[in-house]
Length: 135
Image 1 (tube, rainbow, N blue to C red):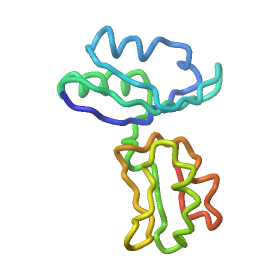
Image 2: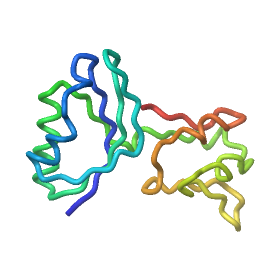
Image 3: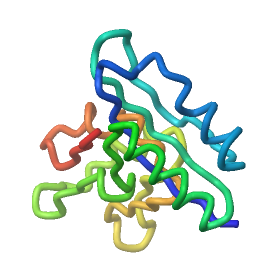
Image 4: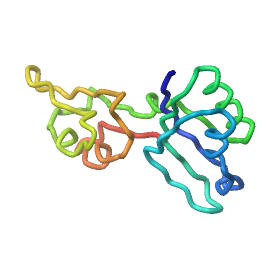
């Protein structure tokens, strides 16, 4: 089994369709919704972690694309500008998953992508706008 984190963008015309149900029922995938922004008749976004056999995940992704859903790899959606970052320590203090930590030796920001759920706290608290989420 493999696990992938994906950002799904739903066109406004299909936000009420049972898309995630189909992933479970038709493709035998397990998923966890990490973040969701969905409103009826408005474009919606979901950050999901999908777990299953590689071929099942690929088939599920193909199904999503055929439904008109845009898919992005979640790991590509967080951008930390190391040039701007002043290593102030604010974002690690607010990071609920401990994906952002300060290295105790170098006192520099360290990002562990596999722990991140793209909650946005880091982006909102950064005093120099060094962190950007694209979801």
